Image 1: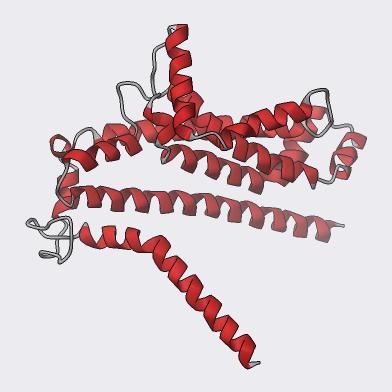
Image 2: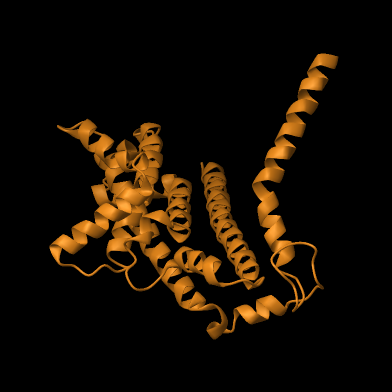
Length: 278
């Protein structure tokens, strides 16, 4: 019992240190962002105020932050929708073995092990050779899909490997078409997984730096803009930006989790109503 207790406390201390290591830098940035007008980039703090958050909204002081935010947000939404749609289609296609399916699968996930900067360089070179303009909404979009799609594919493959086909068979026995079966049976059942794929697609795109570095063109996304700020901004305004973007990321995660929870509650209520009807 004593040995077990020691192991438990040892693991608890290790986990606490891990959490501190993980969130300590974020907490530090959050604290330093509330410095007074004369504050610097390091401790000790020089007063407490919201001055740097106010300064952040002065566009001429820190560059095109809000333009970069809009681009990252829009690109994240496009990547998210594309990732969800393609992942579901691929998951449905791979339910049956076909010639070359193994090679196609490994080709799709190979981009996870290739250095991101090489992906960015390769996509940029291809667009140059084909005479296309390098832009965050075209080449940047394509390079980010090489990062988000493999995660979506792996999730969907796992989901459909566990999917009970008897639900589809029952729908077809009732006269449902393939599209009706997909829309009214398959998609509602896998809806929580779709929320997970969407969350992966948006968050991975929103904070992607390396794969966008050489494919964004003349207009920066938010990670690129923040990186540029580190070389020419020497005030806590960069910490204020970091705090706001971190809060925004947590809000997005909370929204996705809330949607997943609501879907789960709705399914449970429908199941309960169906049981009472029987």
